[in-house]
Image (cartoon, rainbow, N blue to C red):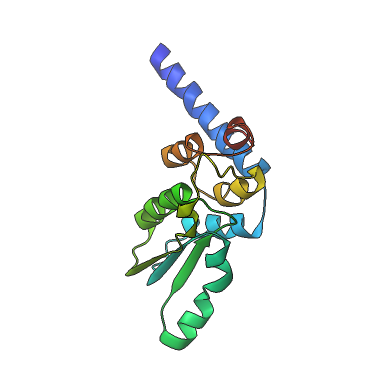
Length: 153
């Protein structure tokens, strides 16, 4: 009986956290776009990942108009390469793609030397689905603020 009550308590706390997390999460264009990708089950021909260079220059509507390819850009400001790796891993779990395009210019910046502003990290992270992958991503952040800010918005 005690085990059942403990499981019920953990489930209640987990559900409450998920609700509070979605209510207090920062809203932005990038956050909404990333969240919409993970909430829908649409297949894409091309998935593009990377920092602002990617989402400012890669045009899914143009790719569809010219070649009939469905594509999605999973970019956010100053997205570091280690965050991009998490995005690729998680995106390929929910959608298969024939081509993955990676803008890897952030690879030249050492994570220890390039500390990200928390607002840029929120742009990428707040739309990312909750779970073990998101927690792992948070634990590997190199940011100018506390990790608690990203675990508990």
